[in-house]
Length: 222
Image (cartoon, rainbow, N blue to C red; front, side, top):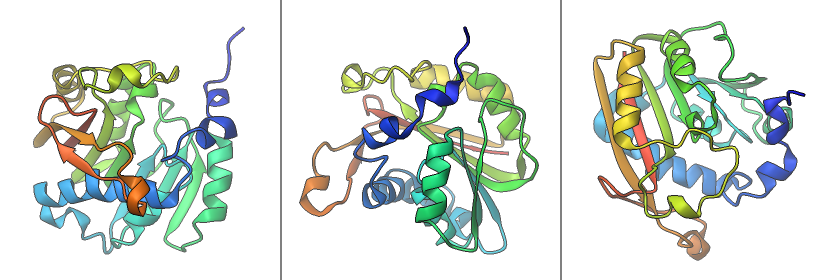
């Protein structure tokens, strides 16, 4: 009997992760690990006035909220009906909407200037197909940003998440993403989050480690 992939992402899944259930931790790791890096790479990327963003795998919507604060109109999507219900309760900005959507299914309607998928591609049975579909949702000069566990990161062996079915190396993801679309720019690097530092003031800190970071961060421009 085939199981619905969404069944794995219920309330127990989300509430078992300190970052997933915390607005402050989600926002701080998104800001420090992703948005500050993106701004260094493409300074105009966070000028979202009059532009549209899609967050894939939005969870409780806290990163979607943060993206909207940079001026974007945001559609946050997740395969989990539980997560989307919580997101709609937690984030009530008029410039953020939420929808249930399986990121590996047929592409949704719309065109976006920014697509963000944080800790998503490792969950997908066919990330190549999904990434190809996502690239088709980008406007010219649109930016795709992903993070994903680094197969060769020093902490990867301790991250025992059974939903992580496609954990790859930096080299493997570069080959995958380069092969799904004709990108004008592709950048992949590793970053290490610093365990337990959030206990000091509720802020998740990170440090770049070009090869051995626990997470990979990926930016591709159409």
